[in-house]
Length: 381
Image (cartoon, rainbow, N blue to C red):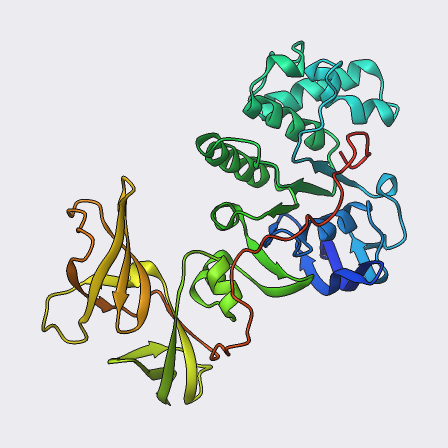
């Protein structure tokens, strides 16, 4: 009977300091073999520094990093079996597509014929068969991204790293490329650590998501866990749109909490809630149209509305404060100042601790980038 394979990546209480600043502060997590784990968060949260620590482009100030069962804490990038796909693609403009893909193989001493065969196979994997003779400048942005992926995959690394790989693409191409990356990862059983600030991208492709804030892990879980059961206002606001409303937990019985939100009283399934002050996350889809006089109906005045094709987005003035809601695009867009009624349904609600007046405002913040851009000549590329 074969012994179980060790986890692909293990971080044990890893800290990385730049002078007095802890860019990564006591971070621990495990990446399973064949898993796609995404590091998600705003600029300056530590996600890119964490990726660089996996790659060996930064070394930790303390803690331990294990890749494939080997302690690599003190090893450089060239001594680790990882490959990285860069935000800027980092293709060599003077080399053909095939030469770019085979560059890492050439550095490892592989013969020209085998390099060419493996490069052609990698290009076929990413849908670029027959384009090996072209120059990068002759390709579209999406094709250049595929070349960057092929260059990393051809090395057959233990761990494949993606640093904001889709940020330079337009929205439609970004969606197509994220689906292609996920499909390739699953077909080949690749272990991937992926960095993005785009929550929709993270939810769409990940097995596990780690939300980072100020160098620490704010929450780790599946995309559904994070969206439906956030542990803080920061996570709730960063993972999708969220309305945060002060509330009072009146009672808890059999894992269901009776919660008062202003004039409305709801029952919310949450086994970890205790009676007392709280905050309730209301996702926009949890506000559904109702008729005046319906049980639990909440009056609302439309502050603004927007037609977005598949849905309407509404900002409402209610007894609970300003709330964002979504509605079926088949309905007419209500005029500013129109009176509407909504009820709050249970799916799309989560109970959190109360938010104090001095607490930081949740959500994305404008902060310095994690670190300097990566060099195009780095082995991990």
